[in-house]
Image (cartoon, rainbow, N blue to C red; front, side, top):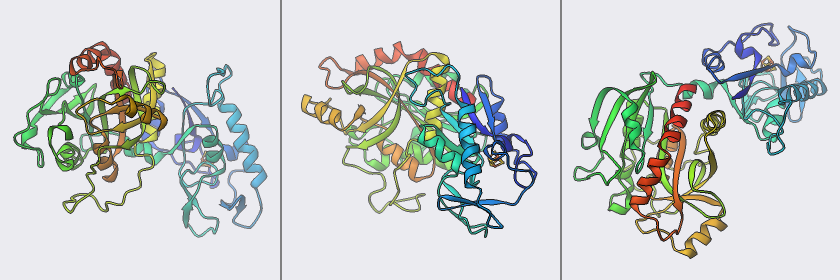
Length: 407
Ligand code: SF4
């Protein structure tokens, strides 16, 4: 996977003060097999001297601390880095015109900063916004993140990756080199009387997959079994308390005809049609506020990594919006038509509430699905879901392992 990276994060002394901002997590990612870093420094590409006075973005203008306007230089440098990041053989189907899917850029800079940057007053005050280069890349459809995101997604023994598996996908648990097992019934908030449906198992495993610390939950309970929103999200709360910062959800779904095909999918967003919400009610624990913004609930960085892994390994995956429904009956033709009209690609009985809670807890979320049938297919059954899971088991396993190796 090709990744645009700020040169200063890789130790190049190109910053205004003549220094660098070497970042260990970014360097580690850049050294992973399959990762092709493209180092850029838009300010150096603009021909600006090093060292020089610091610059900040004030509205649309970039000003040095003595008031000199360097907007043109910054725009020129950004455009030049954009063209050097483009792949020579850009494929016509590539919406980004040959650009890499991911850029990891130095936080807060008037060129590279994304989300927050210094506010133009030269008083070390931050404001919402993107730097000149980050803005340009976003406009081209590139996922832009700072080094903070790479660091926050990096697993460790203290911060293992939680993986919650759905119907038929629990075999991934067999890959774990176990350190400890936890019976779900010992997990706070998990119902004592719950028994796994076929294709699920109720024993979490803490250990490693390919050396990456993980906690794998190879099964879940559902609203349609009569459990509450709080109960079906108990595993997420448990993972968060264990220290997990990344959480992968895998679920079996139906593909909405016209919007997605049967096979593997990466979830980009969701519509919660269950009528339930784990943040509703008075029994809120661990969550600071129930009034949580749900933009980017599926972490763009993780889904870009997953997409990149799939492309590199030749695994066919689509991307789309997920709709969580109560179940257990499958959709009527009228419901399928409604979902199609809502731009929904996948629909299923789990995941939506878990994603809400994980996002509210500040966790990084990756949603992956196996669409085993088309929604509304009269032949859809629990058995057909298990058979489809079996068929895609290899690709699913390669996808998950590939993403884990990149973190
Ligand atoms: Fe260059 Fe961007 Fe680093 Fe500034 S933040 S020194 S423009 S790479």
